[in-house]
Image 1 (cartoon, rainbow, N blue to C red):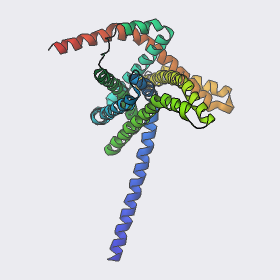
Image 2 (cartoon, one colour):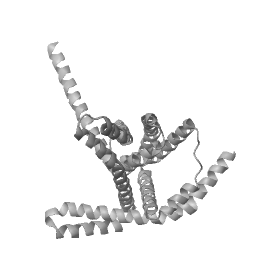
Image 3 (tube, rainbow, N blue to C red):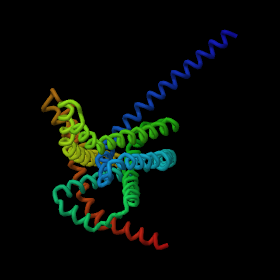
Image 4 (cartoon, rainbow, N blue to C red):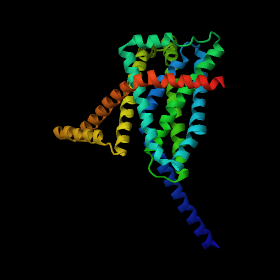
Length: 325
């Protein structure tokens, strides 16, 4: 009897070790897959605070919480099943979808660069937009709905990039990794957004009510630094979108036998690395990032008139046709 019990305990211990190893592997794969989606993640963090501008301080965190809840629904109830179905039934479609998402990142990034260089273009776009409601409740609902819609697009990119970054895994591990990526990224993004939108209030409270001179100075420093931090975050997010998007498209082309650009970038990286042996790896990585970014920016600039003159009008016409029915 005792021998059987010891054998059972040994089996349980072995199973526990296997489960622990699986959990560690899932966590590691989730971290790697999440890092691949860095460009969309940073952009998501940079974009979301804009949706709470104009509201009273007591509504900022509830609005962020509503957007975060919508983001979780997007990822777990819609995009996760879609990604798993795609992986199971049509794995051949993952690379084209990745390239489509990468091209979209390039377009979004290039559009932001263009608007930064030619601000009048953004002003004209805003002038043609529909006016926002004067009712605070309706305005909040509209802002939240718009943020969740934008989040859906970015979340789709994040989940597709994460799916493409995964090796061949058992179904349940793949589902768990994608769920961890979705939840982890949502917590990271909207936790950071909550800190960003309340940083001014925290700095103001410290500057006015802190007991020590150094704490009050820290509060004033936060107030001065936040606009700069937001600007830096926006620039970094745009650069990351273009870099990641360009890299995705270049590697995707290689998968279709069009690896000329990829090979040329690798050759250039090796040549530069050979010139600076002490920092060869860093130099090679910087060359790849720069080349991916230049390609992504050029691709985005090419896509801008196509999206503006062809895709967007066609989409609006299709929406009007569907709504009439």
